[in-house]
Structures are given as structure tokens and as C-alpha cells.
Length: 483
Image (cartoon, rainbow, N blue to C red; front, side, top):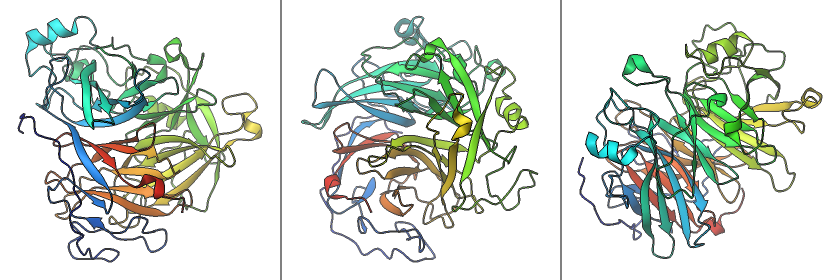
């Protein structure tokens, strides 16, 4: 992997190519299919990128604004494996967006870290701000970086390491008070060479201009965290877990907006279906298995979890034994509020859910009394919104974001061994219609992750995890209308 800085790339609008889309082909590379039941063609065919980075519809353009190995403003190296990300307004400059990015690094894989492997440099820079060190050497090399992007110049004006000493920071979630909740997708600890247990959530202020002290939010639980989403009306934080027996969690803070002060952690239970298995796997022998269809609506309750720091990393197992529902690798998570009804909605993905293991997208509608004693009077509701039946419609649904026009934007993370494996950005309308927005054309065929829109809605930022690119995509977003 080259560490040489390269100039920004820009798709100047290559000539359209005839894609034999919307039908099956022996080789599906650089083509996508339209779901015959729930598919729409919202943008038209993708145009092949001559630079082989990302294929986009006509009228859309991209720039690579950051890449692994770049030099940052703080003198460090841009770490590898960018993953979850959020965009925040810069209170000092309305022309700038602040991007806080995760880095899904685990110290043991030899990935590019911020210090270039220099232990002395790392010790001098980090001081006592790192959460942990790996094998008593470098700080655990997960964490976050923060980028200040200027929309007028289309350039990164500042970049720095903002959290370090954590492991496998996969996704997370933006808070209404302007911080990023970054999640460790691991429960590794001393036995794996670390100095302490991992598997926690950490908070990073978007406006921080230096490395922040890494403080775990223990009350939010220890498990293979994936993402967080905050209900802006209640302060409740929903959480997903990347595991085949994943629970869906919520954290009710004692003081909304001040997560470090603690609170209670709970897991979702489907009423009248204790220990529900929602995965729809055909060969599943779990006694709690039932077939779930998109027409069903489930009433939900929540159970309290205890010993949430889980030294034995058994939080999900204990929760399931108490009746909590399990899902197939919960990953992406997004909170939305409908403008017409003010109905709050929480969407999350089950990456390997479904009878073909290609992925599910779920919607949870909180109770009007969410998190209070009156909740059982009008419980929250759970619905399976979409389950893929073909990998050319959707496969490996992962990170989610809400588009300015109300659709879900879904990042694919498929590591299928098929020769034609390709990752896409998909869209899902409020009516459950799925469409294709972009295709990863890079030879590494890595996942899309961290999709998020700038506060003014003009730019979609997204990461391609390998070789480690952050893109800024612009186009006729305002011409898109709800479908």
C-alpha cells in the first residue's frame, strides 16, 4: 500500500455505458439488478468511472478528500481502515463540515497506525490520553480522526488524531449535542495482548482540535458494539451488536445528554414471543425460530440488563436467556422523525439476516411513552422493512444514514468469495422501495462505510475501507423527490 500523497480525483463525467442491468447475468460485476417486487430505478444507470474508484449516476461527481497514509495537520499519519463517520457543522465557519471518522484497527493485523510504528513518538504524543496499549508497546490503534472540510475550496483544512488506545472502532453515532459516539466492535482483553478489557463506547466532541482523553462509557455495556443512534426527543441511545446472536439495546441515561453520568441498559423483547429468533435462516435449529414477513408488526417490551460491564463477555447470552430477541449481526443504525406525523423511527440492519443470509432492514417505532412506566400502555413496534432475496438487489447491508429527502442510504459490506462480488450504496424509500446509488469500482472491492451528509445536505461523504479512501460526492440531490 503506497503512502504517497496523491492529488484529488474527480469524476468529470465519463460517457455513459450501456449496463445490462435489471436482469441476471452470468457475471454481475459492474451491473446491478432491480428487485422485481420492491425495486425502483431512481437515478438511472451508473456511469463507469475511468479512474476505477466509484461509479455514479449521470450528474454526480466525487473527490477523494483523504486517504490512508496522508500526513495530517498534527504531524501524524492518517490511519487505515476508516469506517463509521458523522458530519457536523463547524460553529466557527459555516463553510466547513467537521468529519469524525472511526478506524477499525485491532493492533494485531499490521495495519497503518498514526505513529508509523514509532513507540517513542507515540508515547510523547499520547501521554495519558490513550485508553490502552497493545502488548505494552504502541497505543491500541483503533480510535478516531477528525477532518475539517471546506466546501468552498473542496479541501481538508485541518486533520488530527482525536481518540486513540481503543480497538476495532467500527461504527457509532452522532449526538444532538454535537459529539460522536465511537464503538468498539470487540470484547478482546488481556488474553489477546491488551492491557484491559475492550468492548465499550467512547465520546468524542466534534469540535475537539486535539487528542481527547479516552474514557469508556461503562454503563452503556460491554459487547461487540456496532452503532448508536440517539432519539433527539428523549435522549435515549439505541445500540446495535455485531454478532450472530445479537441483541438490540437501548440505554436510558440518568441525565439526557450526559452519558458519562450513567443510566440503565435494556434489551428488546418481542411481546408474546420470548427469546424470539428473527433471523429467518432456513437451517436454524434454534427453538425460538419463527418465519418473519414484512407484513408483520410486533409489539415490544424491554428488559433490564445487569452486570453490564460483562467481564465474561456474556451480556447477549444472559439477555437472550431472559427473553430478549436475537438478530443476525445488527450493524447500521439511524434515527429519523417523519415530518408529517412526527413519528419517531429507528432503523437498523441485520447484515446476515434473511432466508438467504443476504441481509435484513428493520424499523423500530418507539412508544409515545418510551422509557417510562406508561410504556406498556402503548408499546413500541418492530417491523421487518426489507429482506433481500438476491445479492444483486442487496447484500451485506451495514452502515445507514438518513438522506435529506427522507430515504435510507445503505452501505454494503459483502466479503463474498464470488468472483463478481461488488459492493454498492443502496437507497431505501419510506415506502420500502430499494434502488442503487453507487458502485465501488476499486480493485480492492472493499466495503462502503460511514455514509453521512453534510449539514447543508449538499455533499455525501463516504469511506471505502480498503485501501482507505474518504470521498465527497456532490450532485443533483435537490432534484430528488420522495418516491
